[in-house]
Length: 244
Image (tube, rainbow, N blue to C red; front, side, top):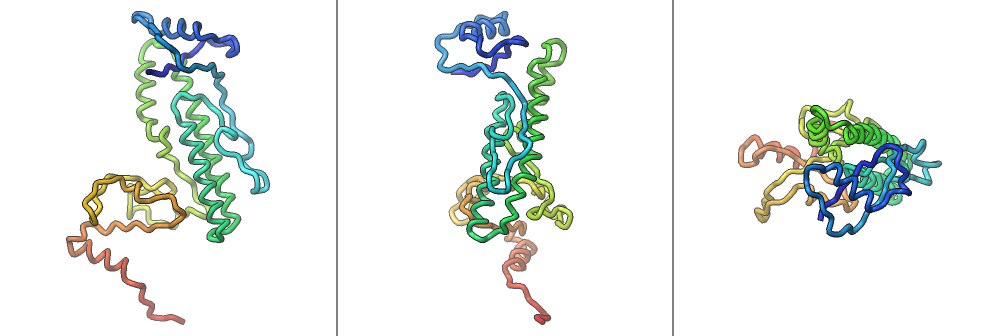
């Protein structure tokens, strides 16, 4: 079973689209090849529109997320990833505020962080939609493929980067200490070997979203004296010469 996104001619009324018309349009796009459909399990006509809500919240008591505040084409699946991240962003903040672990005004960062992401999503979708409708002449197909591959991490939701706020302070952080862990972005995953049982696993799998905070330490090879010393330095309680 395969899925087709079929671009209909400009001016087509979605209410007038038929399954037979979709088959015919797909066959014309694939002209030169034999195109036969045994059965269509599901189909729909969607009028593409890029829209962004003016506000994502009201009085910090009512919040919009996902398609309620940003709509776009369904061509890259980025909508699901962005919507899930909207929910995750506001979810963990609400949980910590209700438990008394965060100040109530922390909830304002939901809008400041996610509005920028949604605006970038609309711009990305306009570019992607333009590539879909571009002429097949010349290097249009190569341009589309290149853009799609370069945007893979973005569409998967891995390139989101939040700006400085009450939660993020890149100006006073030492970014150079971990060049592949960018401040404001999600923690990158990697395949690791767990020391306790030599099990290969994705590091992100052990960082479950259960409300707990975690500290990740990169001391280097702890079999080497320098790596072991770094680990010992972190593990040792701080010493205060002056406790006044």
